[in-house]
Amino acid sequence: MKQFKKEFMTQHLLVLCAMSIIGAFVRNAAMKYGIDGFSCNLVFGITTTILMVIYVHVSDGINRWLVPLLDKHIFYKLADNTGDYYIPPTNIEEPTDEVDGEDISLEDVTFVYTEDISPAYSDYEILRQEALEKKNKKEKTLLDAAIHYTRKTFAAYMKEEHLNQLCEYITLFHGSSDSPKNPHAIKVDKTIRTIDLLHYAWNVGNLFKKRGINTATFIKRAFAEALDDVEITTIIRKLRMEGNCIIELKPNLAA
Image 1 (cartoon, one colour):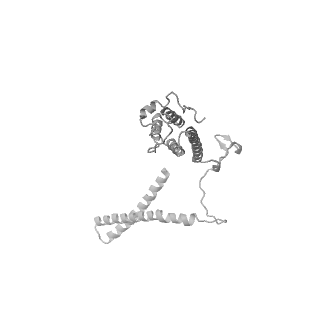
Image 2: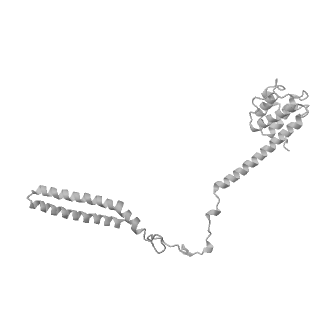
Image 3: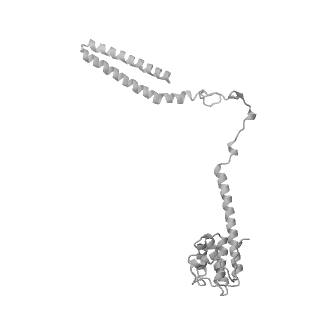
């Protein structure tokens, strides 16, 4: 870098000297015509300045336009016998088999090919898809168990249309903790008492891992007529109430 700066300064000093010499010739010529000393000095300064400006613009034009043009059309288009373009060699060190003073061989080198490496996101997508499929399969198993339990439990105590409606509510309840929102009241045989409905609600809610408030709200809406005089807070407290019943508590409904 220092050597480059020295060469750069030398080049411009030589050019300045040449311009000064030309300016001196012009000054002498002006003196021969009888011009006073001050005007001659002024002519010298103006001549030197004009020549320097011309030099700067010509040099800039050469570096900006002429040099790239010569590089492109002369130095980099020298064709060899194969017809390929010749590219001047660069100072690139050839790799050696010696590292830190130790000799190595190709047997000690492990080559990794990019086509053998799977992108990270591909593994993520595969694992995510497998996890979602496993989760959906598990949820479907739980829903099928709840619907089968519902049909088996109430088949003898309500009409088929009400039983089908209850199964639809079970599906909605499985997908959302706040469903059904605007249900039609399901009518059930009078032999099914409040304790039976509470046990049924707890069995299904426990299977779906629902909170007590959600389970109580579901059964209150689904059996609005049978539980008309029972508050939700009461239902929450008595979901596992003991007593004589037809529908018993089943902690392992999916088993």
